[in-house]
Image (tube, rainbow, N blue to C red; front, side, top):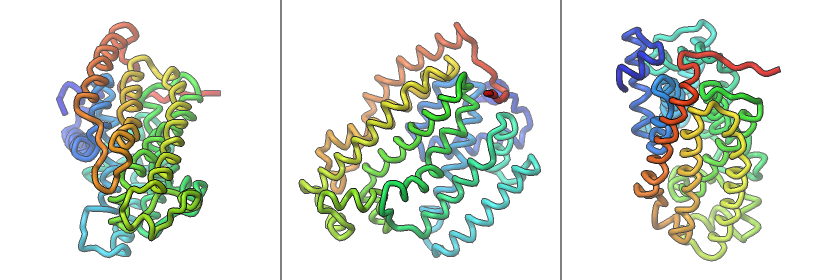
Length: 317
């Protein structure tokens, strides 16, 4: 992260800068599409978004990949202790943890509600015990905490002009997560999990045993088409919310929408062969979306300014 971005954000303390930089690295290593989109924001807002995504990615790594030698109970204990300490840090307004220091600073500056982080940590704990979800309503409890709240955390930084921006941010966050589930069916099975609602799979004659054969036959493909339809509906619904953000924030979210929801287009492009291939948004498409968005972002900053880059929450009556 450049000094320019940190200074523009009002982050001058060296230890705090180190924390923000650590969060940026987590975002760049584990969320390349998110990271690319973040670079389309005004420089003074980027560190705050890196902090939020860095926190989310770190917690997710604890659950999935941080240490394959730990049992689920040991991971649950670790996550619980770390999460509880973070929530205590939020209450006291500061943290000594290398990751959480920047996150607490971001929460303070933008007055982000604590309950959004409580919901996120709840979903991370669910990943340690829940292996499948019977209905979409059941899945929604998990998706709200794992994805919708990330969008809600970000909205204050993006400077909304209406409460509608929050509502649509939930839709987009959920669309992102559901797109992930479609792409990662095989990878999730490796971890013993299914994130596609079982009653919806059953409509196409698919259950856990059927999926574990890892053959994308007609039934599986139809089941994936059903899930993709929901992603596209949520994506379309979310689009109106972008207009209720500060103009300098819009190119970032528009690019993220196109690129991340584009995962399901990539699944379609490989004929739903999710067990044999990993669907990817091509570098060419990323550049095709990112370069015009960068130009739009620069133009918006010149015309409308960068907004409040050091943290001012927007209130609605």
